[in-house]
Image (cartoon, rainbow, N blue to C red; front, side):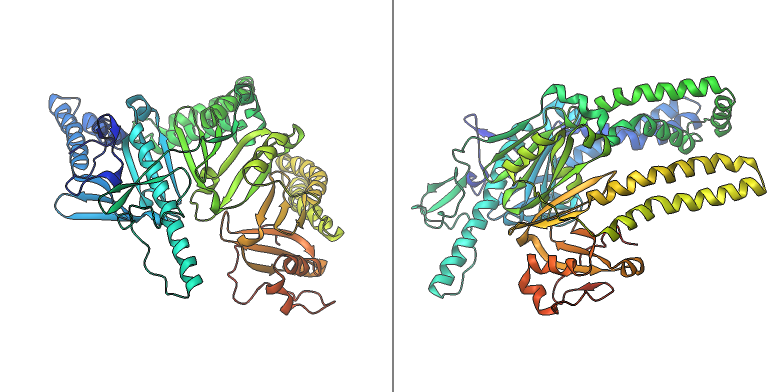
Length: 575
């Protein structure tokens, strides 16, 4: 059986050119090395236990060696029993040993194809290809080929995306032709049902062709147009890593993870938990060492932030090709993600406090049927705001400006929520300090300071509120520590949710959430006026809202979802 990426005369054979007698393809034999290594973490503790219990005798080493050999045999069986091939209008992933299991993925359901290469895969020249069908499950449930050659991965990605777009285009063309003639649309023609003169292929994407063979035509990827490169990250922008809170706090996360690992696996590794606790107490009893450790962590924060920024965003590239936005990034694990442009419904621009002061920001695409959108939908890493908005504007569309301010009552709610909880904690701590122990002043003083900091925080949260509609796209913004502005196309809105808490009703406010079949599922305009909220929804989708509005009447208190429209997720900021 040929290895993935088999070629005829040095040229890869497209699936459409395979003869009926050609056998399916297997993964690269190099997975016989990667699979056992990947199993090692799960075998490490059992092997260590066998060696310890056996007193490191010859027999214990024999049992450990048997386990390693078993993992290699298991990997070989998995490799021998797994094949994949494109058959007609579907991709088949087959595993057959005692029983036969075939996973079928219709080509027209493919939304994107991602290629990633972990360190060991990159060293061996292989990659992991994941297929996104918008099913909402995990990546392995959708389709995964772990161990194709890099060349085969790129070839298969191009073929799968081409087939998906070509079949969808033919189906749309057939429906349009049927509606024009009044006929009943027939089934979608398969790749082997196209005539040699190219009939039925006018809806195929540009840069592809059909190859005649006898009385039928077969698919292959033809000459493609050059990719349009929107952005390539300069190396000097790695200095922006310390301005991102997630990267900046990495040292503390590593220390916490190490302590947790010591407590979790200490007994298996024969590390006495009392030893760990005693070390912590000893450091606590020596303030100079504790201060020195804290200083070292603070000094390590910007350095590790730059390292982590480079690990995740090294050589970040955003380009467009053949109807897809393609983002590639990563230093240790290189990843390439394809987003079908016709399924992009907008974008989300995010800024943290430090990023805002430095004029930076990040952006994610809002895409229908995209799992793990927080990672896979990233359009731009932390970068200068003007460049981020310029690149996103060129790839998707400009950001909405002229946001409408929210009522003064919303400012009072922002201040109340930022100050009142800390005042309650401070009051309880002061009372406890006066009645019982002065130790409670340790809690009271920070709580009072946080209550004071709540004033500028609440005011900034209010200034961040806003919403608007420009005739084709709506935009909502909220947040301070993570200020997010979502820009969504009108066609993406599938429903509205108008909700009021008891506190909002007393303040004459409500939250309007646009239900969107993409991204997080809903984007909220928080604390708008009772009259402004329904008016905003009616402005975007007048045919849905207008029949339920009474001129001059405020919105009905309580949560409500328009009849016939799906409910959006719970809106943030309520209560």
